[in-house]
Length: 519
Image (cartoon, rainbow, N blue to C red; front, side, top):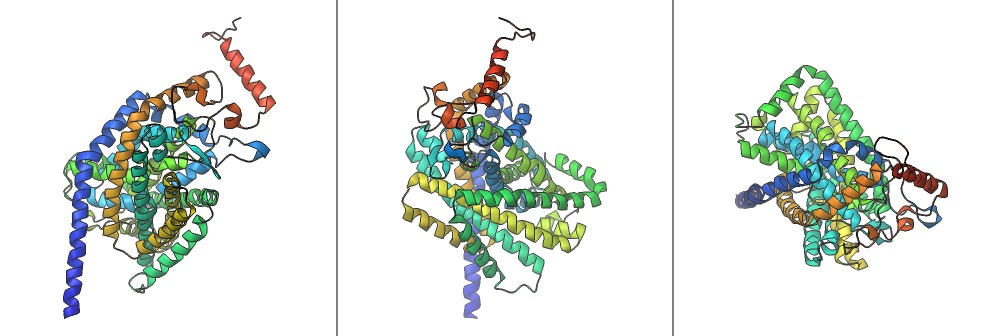
């Protein structure tokens, strides 16, 4: 009797804490973060000439650029594609599958429309932040590192702001978001096993994830890059194939699903009771959680790439936003909506997506989703870890601190597998809001530099050159640590390639607008 009363009081306290966290998180997003995200995204879109749309072909071209090599033929750092997969590993995971289900459960189908809108607007923010991260990156023993903390210190001259951002990111990604990934993996596996799942299952899953995480994170960024490069494309493709199978078997419902997404984006949703403002809020919040545009996380991966011009990685990371939202998130939305779910009683998290898959394809699809979630979630944990490591090294390079950080990451993964899902979601939402706000203020102040870089890149492409940036092109910008000269950026010279490039540039200079040769 006494034990029962104590249990009830404990449950009440947990519920009260969770309600408080939800309330302050909603207020933060409603009154501060949401207006800043939208207004700055629109400003970046206009000032850049809608870079996120007009340069889509260039995004695909730069994704496959050869990695510049240093002395001895060794690559300077990870490739543009590997940096893309590290950031995609963080993006493609819980946000795409559980996050979209949560957005639809709370905001109805109309939330998907606002996820699409914010992905397009956020593409400009993503371009700005990743371009700046490339410009202000620094060298380390593995190649390069950088991110918002680095451009806050080196670009704005505000180390205190960089440290503040670094601390928020460390709490948000390697701890809160990694715990959320572990929680979702556990929930998916428990649902697959069914009611007969033993009570120790979450602890077993957490232990396995913690051990696997420890084995990889103590190997450095190159090991993380090699794992994510292999896992992310394969699992994303597997999930897309599952989704296409659901859509193909329910093709008659596609027009209805589209109609619900567009018609329910503008007003009261009678099923879930969501008003216009709440629908927009869920779309924006879950969209940012999924694609991370403007959040300040992807630049940590973008800065690791060895490229010949900062704009190249800005374009690659913008493509990552589109891949995440317009492809993977949209597949999740249609998986759910074509199954005609009971949104009035839907729960947050992975269950809505998982139930929709089972109803469309059968029980085997639940097992397939479990494997996909496990591998995508694990790769996200690794990417989240790297984001934190880069920012730990910004604060201090003492080896003991980094070792302690790695141990805490492993423990956070273990804890995430066993704690309440609602608590983890609420905590992650609130921290994400502070992180986004800090980063958006910084990139707004530095955006003029990014626009200058975009103009330089565009002019070089128009002259038929493969764009190359060196810091003497912007002598007035302080704090640029690399980009010393053409040799350090591009690597040892290739005489044949350089002669060909010079000839092409000369032909351009001696050709008038009508295409006629001039003297």
